[in-house]
Length: 326
Image (tube, rainbow, N blue to C red; front, side, top):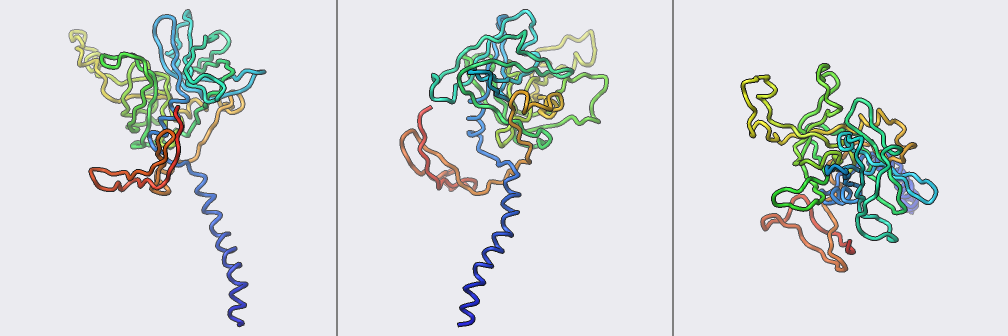
């Protein structure tokens, strides 16, 4: 009886002690950002990336990074590459994402931009911010810490490229790749001005995607895309007798962006000034479980993910969700 009585009091004490020991571990886990599926990052891109059109026929991309309020209007701030809006005599329009509030129509809209009062060029780097007003509600991209994006880190680039031979309409493109190199402070050539392009990646990009965001595996913005590396060895060698060929001008496959830490150094009060969201926590690439949620409009189902007839070693679908049409 004495043993049983002791057990009755010891069990709660053991549970309390266990709980106390586990709390720090749970809190520590919450301090890391979770890697998500590529399609989830793509959904973030679809809600936050904008197209910027110029009256001279050119256009580029940008991403919404902040929201404040002015009376009954929402004031949104878009971050883009400075060369996207370099024409001082041009008129500009922004093509918004699809609003996320149910009161608005579910389509993109064009808004005229006031470049005299709502435009800011960042000094010494190829970055610029533009603001516009709207009664609609748009999603805001979260700014991540670009210092965690080391070589080999998976990244995604989103933007609106110019139409090509097969893709003849302007459509949002979302491409995957990885960080291929970084230019650290001590590695910069003091004679060469790179306008802040200190991070390189292997994602496919095309003209028109300049100004678009570079996302990490957690869906946070870690850079702004703006350059594509090209083969121009003859021109760089300075050989006046050699005419560069078309091959010399082809893209190498490496592309460059300006890290978000560069922007934050120039705009340290981004949270207060433009209503930006910042998450500088490290990224945990290990999934906590091997489940993901999938579904079709108005129908629940469970589907086993298989690869070449075998169960996937990465994901098992064990959760059910119900999705609604866009």
